[in-house]
Image 1 (cartoon, rainbow, N blue to C red):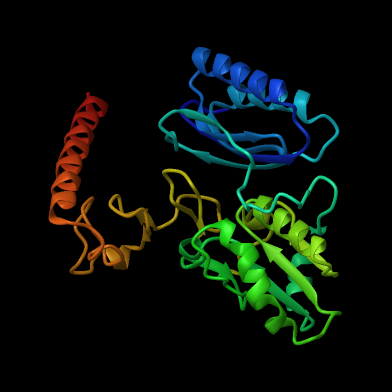
Image 2 (cartoon, rainbow, N blue to C red):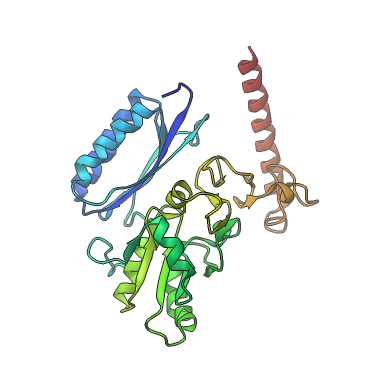
Length: 310
């Protein structure tokens, strides 16, 4: 492994965890962090583990070996990419009720979920006229890239998805119970939980893209890809292109929305202070705070640049 290249590992698995084991995983992960340059965000709950870590490859292997001891024979979903810089500031570990929050306690992906579809088969499935394709991600993620002709539920967070299903899904099926329902997300976890929801509601022919968009971009050539645009990710890279490299989007530090190069040229855009999405969302006092924060960021970047040159 070349030096100064960080491995980024996205990981999730649905499996039963007792409360004492949740605490044990957290403690052991922080021990690894204390001794090594490990950053990322991990969520642990009674239903499993979910998140992304960033470190040198040998450190990633340490974390992976630890997690495998708890996951056991259960499915462990992994996606890998690389970066010349760290994509997180530090390691955060959150203990929650769910590893991806839907808010429907009666569903259980461990016991029942849809059928996994690999990347090659996915292309055939979504080209089928008898298939409806649903993007289970948030609206701001969908806005920068998605599969051709997929349905956008326009949800602001995943916990809104069950209501969308109750109020809208039947209109896309048109009383055709034999239709295929194919769902996808960034790494596979949200669409897997979404299929569990639909199975619980009695829907059949429910499928989800194994490994999500990230695995699809890894497996499918750009020429054969049915994914258009870039894939939003929850780290400093903001979005990835088809080669799984940092894309063209950045984040508005005022509202957190992804903004394109064209967005940054708009009259409303002021770096670190506002963009066209949030120009009417904040007070003048808020913008003064944002301005001071941006000055500190710029100052820090100048200092880093001087150090790197020396």
